[in-house]
Length: 165
Ligand code: ACO
Ligand code: ZN
Image (tube, rainbow, N blue to C red; front, side):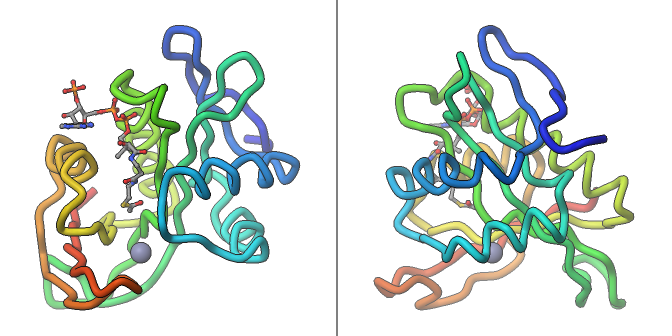
């Protein structure tokens, strides 16, 4: 599958794989939706590392949401060995396009891509106060596996949530 390939449509929206030229728009969505920001280099690095796991939602040529992920090796959250894991690094949808199923669809497509890359589990960190996101992850079967105090720069605690794939 090439960069930019359309994955599926949801009403007037399409989900497609990101292109390098989309990164500035993805950065803009991140800037207005989340307090966690990243260097431009980091976005290109994720695109290089796991292009199938970097997906955007678009409407009329405008990017309104993204998910970006990384493949990692490490201790399983569910058994006693080392596994390949898909890390959901960041997901966001512009406020005016929420509750239309885009976040859920991007999560499902990213998890499919993780499975194809041999990942046995998916995981992410989320602020303990982020109820919309936590609801989405629970709906998809993610469970809280640990907490990391002071994970965020403002001192907030993170929930680590994971799911076998
Ligand atoms: N309240 C309660 N449940 C919610 C909410 C909410 N505000 N939003 C989503 N959900 C749950 C519901 O179960 C919903 O299903 P339903 O609409 O049938 O009830 C389900 O999630 C799917 O919702 P979507 O419409 O697919 O989610 P959306 O496109 O709105 O995106 C997201 C969810 C990405 C969390 C969005 O709210 C957002 O961008 N928030 C700001 C950025 C953010 O917090 N990102 C996550 C940070 S953690 C991380 O990146 C790993
Ligand atoms: Zn993370």
